Length: 88
Image 1 (cartoon, one colour):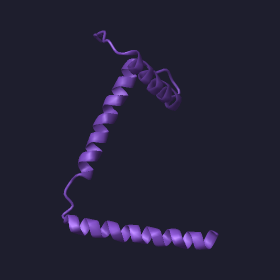
Image 2 (tube, helix red, strand yellow):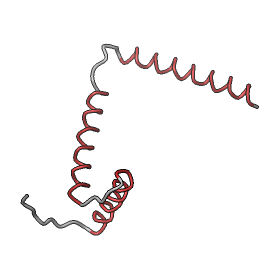
Image 3 (spheres, helix red, strand yellow):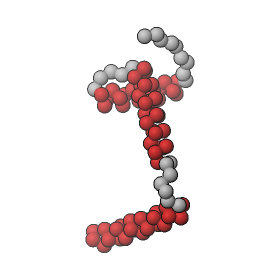
Image 4 (cartoon, helix red, strand yellow):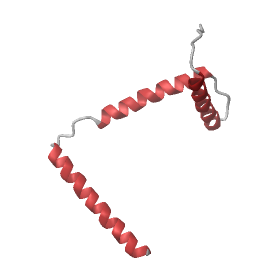
């Protein structure tokens, strides 16, 4: 495998080390900068796909979505009031 040298700031290096520590803790084995960068790249692509999925048209108008949101909030408030009554 060919390699290259890149310059990064001390702050970026510290952040990469934090991510490396988290990955090492999860995986139970040593992780190098290459592994950290690959992980971050895969994660950024996955997050982008999730965003695009969330932004897909639903076939509902904004008015319908707003109405559904208001109804859901109203149901949440009623549920919270019921819990307060039950446990206070």
